Length: 322
Length: 68
Image (cartoon, rainbow over all chains, first blue to last red; front, side, top):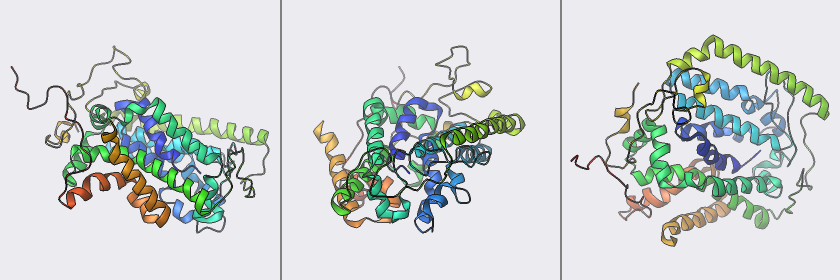
């Protein structure tokens, strides 16, 4: 499993999705697979199987789980930016967790073969602290640091107040306005929530790394498949060819299933959905990826607010259609 | 520049010290994402102090700017 990488990758995703996708939905999406399961994992007799396998709660680490959650949110809220955010965030989590030895079942239920590149060992069997020590003694800790560096070098603008005011809030005005009103949070307070997830990732990475070095005193072994002081815990004995064949069949069936769902009901839900006021996408599936700034032929939507969102503003939700 | 990042650095040190010493589930999962908000904004205000962090003022015209 990945630890702080799930916090850092949110900002990297946000940089590429901009105002099309709600940042808070991305965060919820990346947290979802572990949100209701992580605590139970450590109490399980076979943590790796329970966390990632089937039978178990491994379906939470499958692409279809993200699709189901996103479609449910789209049906209930009509918010395209939230549905997309949850889908992208949950899929990012699934793809990130490929890297440990337990892997994920991306195309569950069409294939229950775990897919993994075995970069580091899934160590939940060691208990919560043993898991943390093992993760930050392996390439897992390096993986976290890689995502931290990716955000700092390639997505640092997403951490700036101006970005928060002009992109993040306009992409999700209702929820930020609700936080502002309900909890009497100022403009600065809302910004601290936004950058708080980055800070949280950095804090966790630093704390657990220090714990691994000076508390648990585990050897730092950033080698492929490490740490070597633990035994392996692969969920499947299948060879690489077998995994590729089963996963490919699962992938094709999953693609067909998605297409069928799109034709039958998701398209209808999408078309009755609404975008944030800062954006207008046009019609069809391409609108998930194209905005009027990419394609001048699209009908322009209302411009993002010239100013940001200060604590003396009227609630932006008042200007939100739907 | 240093003054702008100082509150964040102090909050990070505080979080790491709390994290390493307490190893608390509550801190890690519940407080964690909101720690920055609590440390730099909510708690100082609750104790009647100025928040340790404030965004720079908005540049450009605002809703209060009179239309010529």
